[in-house]
Length: 107
Ligand code: AMP
Image 1 (cartoon, helix red, strand yellow):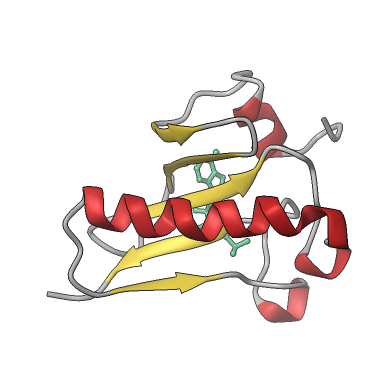
Image 2 (tube, rainbow, N blue to C red):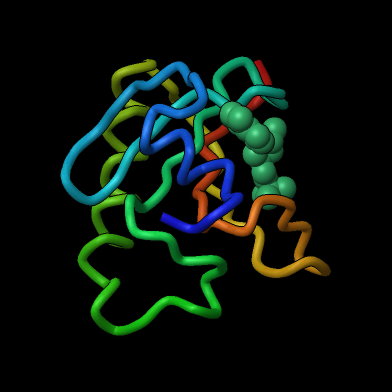
């Protein structure tokens, strides 16, 4: 748990979120400011600030996040969709806890 991290607070249920998936490695919930009809965020339970900080030992978690996004896309019956990770301030990252955006394609 990283002090002041909004996504760590979501993991620890200190702030509310609409959870779609949770397991021992990762969690998925709805983006508070959706930019698509379906917009979910998949995050590791371990605090990793950016993909630049990910270590070899995080590989299983990162794989689990991708597969979780794929399964959620199936659950929401998304034909096509986007998976996006912003890395660093100039990469558009606003929340410094790794998150994978799952966004439905425009209809
Ligand atoms: P990024 O710009 O890639 O860092 O994306 C951060 C995302 O986190 C944005 O799409 C925000 O809308 C979303 N976000 C920030 N705070 C929350 C929250 N409390 N619950 C859900 N989504 C959030």
